[in-house]
Length: 222
Image (cartoon, rainbow, N blue to C red; front, side, top):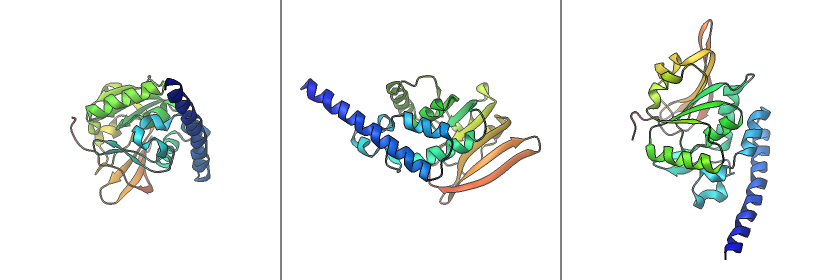
């Protein structure tokens, strides 16, 4: 019986490697060009970050439920946001708002970023810790807190990435951006868009990017 389970696990491991490679090729065909991002997506085992019942869909380009009314973003969205955040620069110190299951955290770690990540739901944060341990990625600083306020004690950040949609851009996050830093986040309610903010010597530059659909950024913590 144990031998059968081991064989099944090995077979799935081989299958997930192949499907992950196909996922990366789809990302490349969809316009993702940063090799650091593509390499990170190729290395992170996404099936470890979703419920076992959904593991066979882990490498499809879809968002999937992770419990508590939250989702893991589709691979193209993860890749796109990471690419925009890192374009033309070293990863540096990155703040992630909304740890979720830990998948975006893992991708950022694989690009070489120093990652701080905030999650308001303690049950999800515990799950993210377990997932990251399973993926042998344990260097992120995970914090239970309200993402609206960022993490001032660790600021400034070269990059800030938010994985939930806010009604407005939180001023606290803008204040925690380093000079030359970038913030990428979804903004809106019924209609949402990704926004890129860049802090320059001339002031804050704002660029509207792709239409998206994220769960809302909620206040407080549970």
